[in-house]
Length: 324
Image (tube, rainbow, N blue to C red; front, side):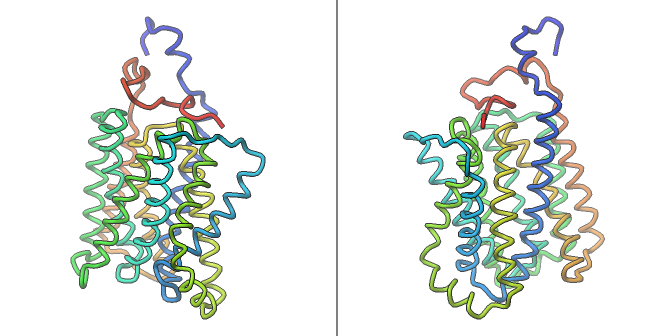
């Protein structure tokens, strides 16, 4: 920021307090989503992909409804409904079903690594579609993180995919994940984060209702631990983590936030080691370190006068993009 910058630009600088809250929201989101990969793997022997998705989303919808108590409600308008529909059907509905099915043939660590092509797509979409801009540090960080994902994949023997069906399900999950984020960001201009997350989860649950017979039969046969796993998936990685993600997304560009999820695969590898006794390959550990380095580099974006000025047609930046 130069000394000649107008006072209005100085007023747009975020305070230290909100930045710390955004950082906390990112940490909660990443840890919760990392745990989801491990829990899904643990409960999948007792549930189908659609049944688990429905159970998770029903619990998540109830949890989010409780979080909505006392909060303001904004009536969506025309284009808002289309964005919310794609967000809910894609990221909550299709994503969860596809992710669950993929983990019937792929381990949690490999699944988390493959789905993390999404932040690259988000960075490109955020820069081009949402006109957030693509900076040099974002490109370098995304490149490092992608290289780290490749190393992890090679280190865990990702070449042995069997029939390959799990890979295609993960790619589908990554695609709808990207579409969901790119629709969620502009929807946050008018819709509070908590309301948008609740509506998205409810829409996803409604879309998964055809799996009701499967879920009821699986709940009758599943052990208590597996049922508790479904409840955990609905409350923590869904209700809580999607809320903290929406909070952070309303206060920073989608491209920068999306790259932070590269921290998920290394965490999943560690959690898989603790939960299932899986020993990650040395190359996978190196890849995890490279991923984290990429996340750090991508966030090295010093604020300049050009950064502070809104881009034509772009979303609002910082704390003024969402007020709850």
